Amino acid sequence: MTIYALSTPPGRAGVAVIRISGPDVLKVWKGMVRTTAGGAKKGKQREQEPESWKMHRCRVVDPISGNLLDDGLVVFFKAPKSFTTENVLELHIHSGRAVISSVLHALSLFPFCRPAEPGEFTRRAFEGERLDLTQVEGLKDLIDAETESQRRAALMAAGGVTRNRFEELRTEIIHCLAFVEALIDFGEDEDIEEARERVLKLIHIIETHLADSRRGEIMRSGIRLAIFGPPNAGKSSLLNFLAQREAAIVTSIPGTTRDILELSLDIGGLPVIIADTAGIRKTVDLIEQIGVERARQLVKSADVALCVLSLPDIVGDNESQSSVRIPQSVAPLITSETYLLLNKTDMVDVTPERINCIRDAAGAAKAWAVSLTTNKGTQGFLDGFAGALLKRYDLMQEGGTNQNEPLVTHARQRVHLENALQFLNAFLSYQPNDVVFSAEELRYAAQAVGKISGLIDVEDVLDALFRDFCIGK
Ligand SMILES: Nc1nc2c(ncn2[C@@H]2O[C@H](COP(=O)(O)OP(=O)(O)OP(=O)(O)O)[C@@H](O)[C@H]2O)c(=O)[nH]1
Ligand SMILES: [K+]
Ligand SMILES: [Mg+2]
Image (cartoon, rainbow, N blue to C red):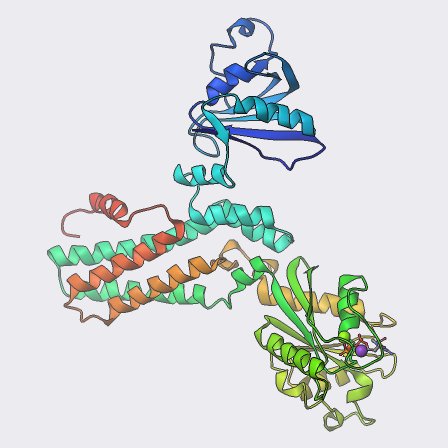
């Protein structure tokens, strides 16, 4: 069936693109497109196949009445060199409600045409093996990308870089398998050691990919950042500063924030889902108790935790570390990965040495000092905090290559990769003389990685590989 859909957002704009894909695209061309190219071609247009991958100036007409619907441009993509691998036609028309609906209505008059389902063009691209699943995921992520880092990662996946990296892993497993199968047929015992060493290396590579702290998945969905601390430290003031608007209520009454308030922000090009929480303290107020418990849970489950402390409340008069009083209620939530924001420097200022002292006393990763009312130090904090997040999540920033970018960006990919790892470990657990059974494990491992792309059958590749093998190896 030939399918069609408006591929641009509906509404008033310069241009709308209607995409048509399927076996009968040329019939649509003949019925609705009148190119305005002059000369000899004019009369022949109805019979000839249009020149592919070229913009043609055209009039778009109703296929039955021949009435003019709009004036625009058309491109024909000849199969298989099109997005869907089928014949594709793109009508570039004026983006107005009536223009679009008249052209869509005209398309519906063809008995062989129907409106496309959501994602159907991409599905056809997958079925035509134009895209594998990692590219389909990348394409979806590209459309959803809201920050620079998301755009870059999605583009890598959509462009096939991710696909190639998984394919390299799979090819290496298949090489190991081919090696073991050759042993079964013509085996010499020493060779099994070589196969085991190659599998060990592979295990190491896959383990490294899996030990990425879920960076790729976190970057795609957004880094979950929890702001926490004692009441009145300035947590909600911080949220408002980061959001650049009065999103949360700020008052001088301790216990103002009770529920969790979440916002999505872009910090240094990274997607961050930031949460303001209730000030953590012992309280008899039932509602506040629930808020405090929610805050504790959120801090524990967040990707990044930022503790806000009020300087006048925590420092004594003398400069020594022993004079720092980290409130009992928040101290257990501070870990070596927690960031500290020391607020209210307008009331008590601190030297950089003193900041480091407090950071060490609290056992935190990094600390900055600011005044959220006067804005002193806030730009330095923002730069430093963004830098710390970039270092933690986005290796591309540090003159990195594609190889540094996390390979796994979807939970689905992780599951298959973990399965592959199990099969490879199972291969090693066999006695060296159990070659026949252990080979099966390699086959499963290759299949597990193959499921990530969703395209290829292991047998096909094995056949192709063996064809290139010479007897004796
Ligand atoms: N002097 C001074 N006061 C500040 C500063 N930042 C915030 N405050 C004040 O501190 C009080 C508490 O601020 P909030 O932002 O509501 O503090 P919070 O941590 O969200 O408080 P709870 O929601 O009650 O836990 C308010 O009166 C703010 O105006 C600062 O840098 N200097
Ligand atoms: K408050
Ligand atoms: Mg608050």
